Image 1 (cartoon, rainbow, N blue to C red):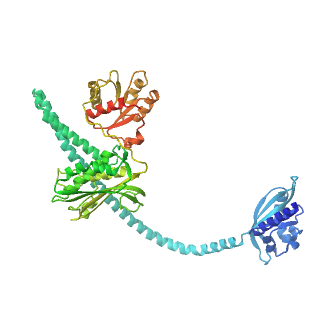
Image 2: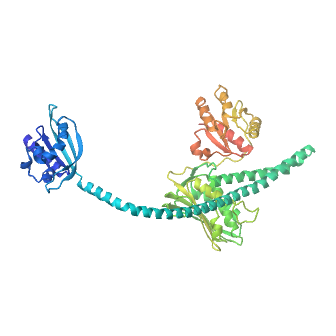
Image 3: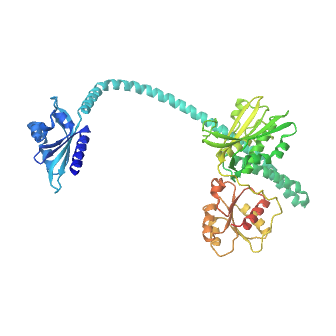
Length: 552
């Protein structure tokens, strides 16, 4: 059996080397051929019996042997070698070949011959030669064409430069138009609001100086109204720029729309019919409820204003799958499951020119003073920041349809507890203390005053470096209230260092704008919360009490 297995192994080995397109041979220490594959035999036109036992000199001849003698000697001395050479062929023509000699070692470690590997390079050399000849004949023609192409290329580059300069000028003009529209809109609205605030404060000061403090109530109301409008404007700008702080929570879209039905009915007016087409088994979403409610209310107001003589306002929800090419939007659409919330009307509609500018900030067709032009741009920014999309379609005289697509939430939505009703600001429990870190002196003064009036022991610092010594001490601190955008070390970094010393420390972040805090779920850890500036004194007091009283 062993002999049979050995013969079979030898047969398979011979079949393998015969299948190789390379000449393979083995010569012993006397330079006699002891093994060859079919390619080797075919090269010289010999049978196995005719080649076996013959020396290299006998096969290739004295002249060619002399050119390889040093390579053969090196291989028998244990040094592998590779070289290119002409080799005789059975057809009488010399062939160019790449050769390799590899020493063969016996079981005792002694060199008992070497292997020969030969690759026919004739066709490659002929191709190279043909290409070389072709290249020589082409050089003159190429030179002529190169000169002609250079002249044409120079003309083309000049034309492209002029075109690029024109395109850059157009882009710059469009950019400046957009910036001008944005800054002009902001300046117009803020100047109106600041006039109301500054004028009211000046009159209040005059009335106080004239000992007429009892009459300043209407001025405080006017100042508060203008300030709240300014706060709403900055909120809309952050929404448009996709930098607002989103408090994402699982939501049931149909439930949210139904909860707003009374508000929609109150907003639309009696001359407009409201239709609700809510889909069955609509998926849950993960979104900021207040921002989504704001977006739907804005769309309802736009639809109402587009139907002054009455009409039909339709609100719909549905499950939708987008494959990435369904929507013609400026932003790329990620394929997947979405929930569609749509608001449509059969009112005046928009012309193509107006439709093209619908999402531009401060663009509005309403008379001055009746619209900021930030409604649709705010909703567009909210949709993009939420990972969704916003589409609008409209025809003059046929109405407008706006559809908001928000990504599906694959886990079931959990019911959220309703927000607590506004009550009188709660006072501190004896001994409770708060660490306040705020770099703006005016804001720091206001918050400290609130803490003092509510009975909290308050410690203040203008930056993280000043706050750390107290936070690392043994003094009682129930809550850290810190601005996110502090100079140097920011508020989030301060909180992390403070929690190394006080792992259970509650942290309330204040932010006017912080890109890293735009996504609360990624920014806040357990025991942390965030309140956006500007905030009311009552809202701050409620949040502080809620944070200190919260367990875990």
